[in-house]
Amino acid sequence: MTLPVPNAPAGPHTVARRWTRDPENVGRARDELCLHLAKWNMAEVTDSAVLVLSELVTNAVRHAQQPGDRLIETRFVRRDGGVRIEVHDAGDDKPELREGVPWDQESGRGLVLVDHLTGGRWGVSDREGVGKMVWAHLVCGSGGGDAAEVAP
Image 1: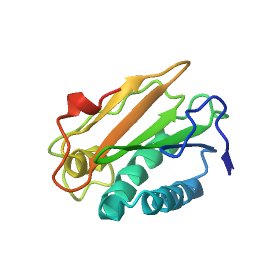
Image 2: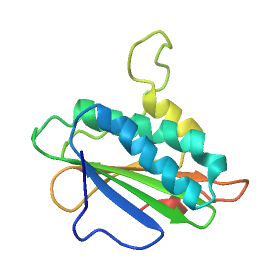
Image 3: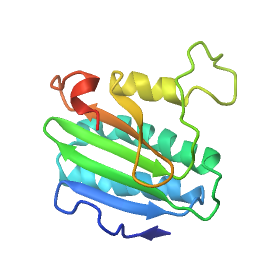
C-alpha cells in the first residue's frame, strides 16, 4: 500500500511515497523508482539504483520494528548527474557498514553492496520526528563528486 506524503517536496524532480512494512512493498518501491528513472532519462543507473533501494527498504522492513504501525517513506530526488534515494523509518538503530562479512552468511552484506554501488556516497542522518533517514546517491556516467557534496 502506498500513501501520499503530506508536506513532501513537490515537483518533477522529487517523488515521495509512504509504504506499510509489508515485504511486498519492496518490489512496489522498486517499480516506482524504475518508472521515475525512465522519465528522468537515467536508465544507466537503474540496475544499481534498484539494488540500493531494495537493500535500504528491506532493512527498514526487517529492522525498524518500533513502533509497528509506523510507515516507511521513500524519496527519489533527481539531481544534476544522478539520483538521490532516501528511505525514512521510525527505528532508532542506525545501520553500520560491516566489512569482512563472509559471503555465505545470510545477512550483513547489504550495506557493503550499497557502499560499492554508490562509490561510498551514502549515509545515515537524523530526521524530523522519530527515526532516521538512510540516503544514497548514484551518479550517471563519470560525473559526480565526493560524498560530502551529496550529504543532507
